[in-house]
Image (cartoon, rainbow, N blue to C red):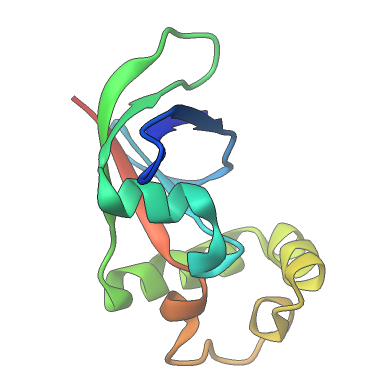
Length: 120
């Protein structure tokens, strides 16, 4: 779970996200609804967040939206390592590139922004 602040209201908000990769202590998540997701727009405006993982306590963390090439690599790795989950996700989000074995389109990272959340 990620706790973030509303970019307009300043209110504390929470969102439960699925970790698609780990990079050391950092969790990597994907915004399945792209930039229309309010949590993504909020962490873009203020990357200071709190991260809960497992049964642990929330920890201060920082959210970083990955550059397109790095994001594309994360999505490709997820699709390769978890084909059934990627197929189901692609079907649910109506994203054909996740369902098939075809190469990912160049704009996949624009449609599915990837965020690294690193505890402090």
